[in-house]
Length: 115
Length: 113
Image 1: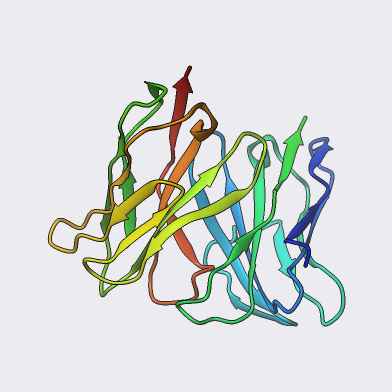
Image 2: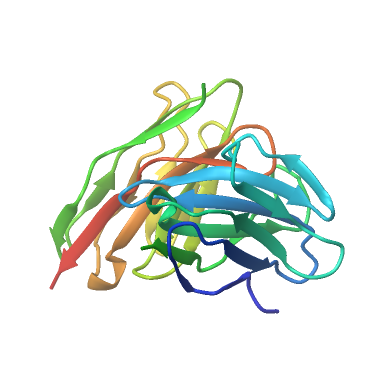
C-alpha cells in the first residue's frame, strides 16, 4: 500500500505563471488536507476536501488559490499568477474518514520556488 | 483561538544526552495532541499522540504526557542518537479529523556524535 504521493517534488515557476500540485491519497482514503509550510515556519492548514467536495477552506487565500478532489484522479492544488511569496513547501495528507481517532498520513511535499 | 507554542530552536545535543522539547497549547474543549518529526527533505511522520488528559504517548524511545492542568505536551527522550536529528512539530486537532491540525513552528534538533 503506497503512501501519500505528491508530485512534482520540486517545482519552479516564474512570477505570473500557474502552479499545479498533485496529491494522490493512500488507497482507501477519501479525505485530503493541504498544508503550506513557509520557510522557518510550521505547517498552516489550507483546505480539507472529500471526494468532489470542499469541506473546509478556511485557510485558503481568497484569491489565486483553488483546490479540487475529483471523483477520479488526484487532488489538485492550483495557484494562479504565482508571486514570490507563494514559495513554500506544500504538503498533502490523507485519511480514510473524519474520525478524531483516525490518523492522517502526510506526503513528502512539493517545494515550490517562484523566481 | 486554538494555538500551539513550542520552544525555539535550534537545539544541539551530544549523542546520548537527554532531550526535552517544550510544547504548550491553547484550545477550547479537549483536543488531541501530537508530535510529528520531519527529517531533512522529507514529509512529516507521526511520532506519537495522546487523545485525553494524562495519556502518555510513546514511540522509538520518545515520550510525551498530556497535561491538562499545565496545558502542556513536552517531548522527552532519555538518550538521543545522531539519527534523531530532525525538526519536531507539536500539533493539536481541535475536534475535527486528525487531518485538520494546528502546528507549532517546529524545533530543529541536531545531535552531534
